[in-house]
Amino acid sequence: MYKMPPNERSVKKLIDFNSNDVKYRETNDNWNCFNHIIWRNVLYYTAIHIAAIYGSYLVFTSAKILTTLFAIFLYHISIFGVTAGIHRLWSHRAYKASLPLRIILGIFSTIAYQGPIYEWACEHRAHHKYSETDADCVNSKRGFFFAHCGWLMCAPHPAVADHGDKIDSSDMLFDPVVAIQRRHYKPAAIILCFVMPTVVPMYFWSETLCNGFFVCVWLRYILALNACWLVNSAAHMWGYKPYDVSIGPTDNSPIAALVLGEGYHNFHHTFPWDYSTSEWGWKCNVTTFILDQLATIGWVYDRRYATRDLIEKRRARTGPKDHVFIHQDIGY
Ligand SMILES: [Zn+2]
Ligand SMILES: [Zn+2]
Image 1: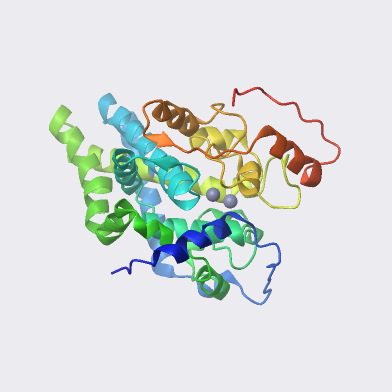
Image 2 (image 1 turned 135 degrees about the horizontal axis):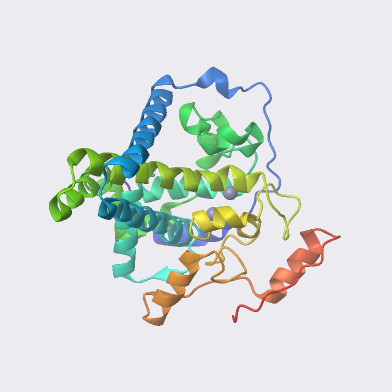
């Protein structure tokens, strides 16, 4: 059960989660993730990756083409639920969305099965505030594997809970979509992530249970999961830093293409409240394209974005000094 937070308090705290905590740079060299491995999780993640590999085998041997297309469709809508919904809307409040859109995003993000919106967004706000420190659950200073998925296979560093609790995320529970999804998360995820993707191909085009289950559930789920994990791992290690050279996140176009526009991570950590997560508009950014289309029918409104002037000033202050950057007109 969750408690509804007092109105005023949570609204005031909203400003806080979109800024880096530059004073906090705690490190604890004695803490070693290998001493805190949760073997049950290691087995679980190994098993579901094997299931996905078997799913990819079925794609080329026995699955119907419609099943593969349906898996691709589910991959994209589930990632859209994460990028447009959990990430840009609920974690960063970078724009506002009508109730029908919020319900759709809630359903899509449940298909993604990456945890309830509320918990995902709480962790993500802490990731921004304490990026590349012990309080960041996906701390990329511990290496690619840890930032990618290793963090899910060991107990978190104590600083994650200590500092995560300081971030007020109660604003999200005002949204009934977030609250209801959180309350009914397990049955909803079983139905939307596992049952529906298996049953739809069986019912509509007489696919086998095995093909539906391994292709539309495990293969689709694992590919989407790894694509999203790359933002925490690769986009914190490899790429350009055009906006702030002092932070870990990088701009990485190939990842942006995989994750519907979430790879411009140096920009995103510099301006986390920008609804587009980049200054390049629709380029490699399907999420922004769809949000802009939805804005024309009023389902998306109050989009916040960094102005060119603000971007230039920030780049002059914290960007690379030896780099000439050419702007592309995106028509803001
Ligand atoms: Zn990040
Ligand atoms: Zn973010």
